[in-house]
Image (tube, rainbow, N blue to C red; front, side):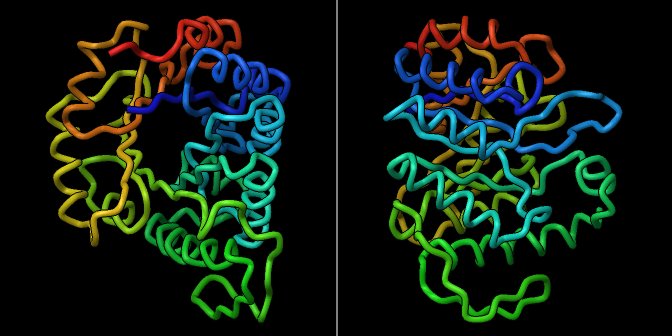
Amino acid sequence: MRYSINIPNFGDFADPRAVARVAEAAEQAGWDGLFVWDHVVHVKSERKAFGDPWMLLTAAALATGRIRLGTLVTPVARRRPQQLARQVATLDVLSGGRVIFAAGLGGPVEDEYGAFGEPTDEALLAERLDEGLGLLERYWSGEPVTHRGRHYRAEDVALLPATAQRPRPPVWVAGFWPNRRPMRRAARWDGAVPLFGPGSHGPAPAVEDVRDLVGYVRRQREGDGPFEIVVGGVSPADARDLVGPLRDAGATWWDERQVIGSAENESLEAVLRRVEQGPPRL
């Protein structure tokens, strides 16, 4: 089991210096990863400061030398794949190969897409996500790419430098369980980041739900290579009764997350207090 800290890219964490403090404290306390959200507005009626997630993670990379770094999650469909490929590769090289790339549709769709005149049809966004992921993998290779897809084009372009990790950084895919399509997508990559219903960001999932998801993803997988199942919530430092059964059900990462909408979720002081207690003890 590995353990990560999860923070938004707004509130106190719009400041790269705050994210660097969390990253440094997490590494010192024995955590394995730090993940930040990738939102532009989240809820457009809320007037908040936001930090660009890749700049926040750059600050975290410069403050650390061991922990894994990434977003949870990046909405590939609202980004240009070539620009996103550059950002991820640059961070992977800078960090010495510590990036994990997690992708999903993102949301709220009306706020994150519609507010900027982007399409909001989720079937269309899913098409862009799938095509974009395939294109990112090719860009990260550093080899010349020609692509004529439904949504994206590339004509004999090679994006250098390639990622430090070969053949590419791990790719995790998020989605709501029990929706099958996102988990089938995840099974084609390196990990699944399921949410178990609305409002599930803070509460830990039920063991039975994790066991069902793990069984489903395993049936969709081709081959027997490493595959991560990422679950999370709010935990005490001594979490044997909470995290232990989830590990036994097949989860491989515990992602420490505050409740969405709570003051603690956006508070540097509150997050540091939990970080300094160290990851859950099993």
